[in-house]
Image 1: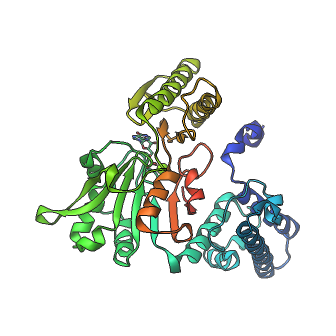
Image 2: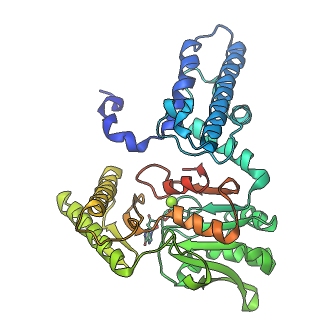
Image 3: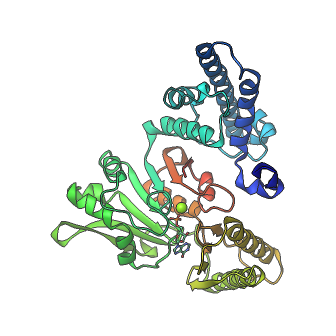
Length: 391
Ligand code: IMP
Ligand code: MG
């Protein structure tokens, strides 16, 4: 039996992106029907032409969907019928041009045995998004772990991204790291994790005005920091108190409501530990509760913890026992790769806080993250701006 038959695909729906699956399906037809050519060069050119036409058609479907969205009836679009879970596109996507660029480099159309994959389609969508947003970009937000640095690691000094981030700041673009990592108002902990980048700011002698365009938002949306030049040309982070910016309406919860929600999450995580005989520590913070394993857990075990706590909290919020509040408190239960966390708030709120503060509308905002699937913590940002999905 091959591994393909051992996977239960019914349990993996949350691992898929429906738009990417739809595009993959469209590309599969010409791949299968034209995979045995007589002349190699003809095959490459003809398949490139067919793929390019498919991307052009999908580009038009997206344009049509955007026009129905503007009329307030997105579900009427052809795309919404083909991909019912489709969200909002804040910019058009030049998919045909993006395909041609990616194909010129990766020669997807030259392959005879491996059809266009999830990763190929995702790269093309990312390229199209970057091309579309570049002229009006005002705010780029990055996830931290697994996007800018390895899980639990720090931003290293010789990181190739330092120069690119600096060039964004110098061009007047605001840059923020929106991370789940929650250390309260302790600027030193965030400075430590970003020490390589801050040292890079120093080496590049960023002007105060340029450095001030760089922010860190920790605990998904809870703790904001700005960059300041301290004594001796040292670049550091400074906590911005809640009173200094308008998060009202976006983070309107009381501590007692938060603690009740965290109690429910903690109980569920402890139940997971017992049920699956996991050896793990449960960490409680003022705005989060986490399960940190003592030995590596499988992805399935961590997904189980994330999905169980997600469901327990939704049930609690729907039950008469929950403390009344105007809107249910947003939370984020996710598989962090090596741990599982339930945070109060989410990155959607985080990105919205920054958009309000920096006057960046969704069509000028880009979030780059690694966790856009339903047990990930970057997914929610899709509602506030355009997303780039990386591994
Ligand atoms: P992100 O990918 O930058 O959003 O960071 C996610 C990771 O931050 C998680 O996988 C955890 O390892 C780590 N982390 C540290 N503190 C917290 C917390 O309070 N809530 C959630 N994640 C945390
Ligand atoms: Mg991440």
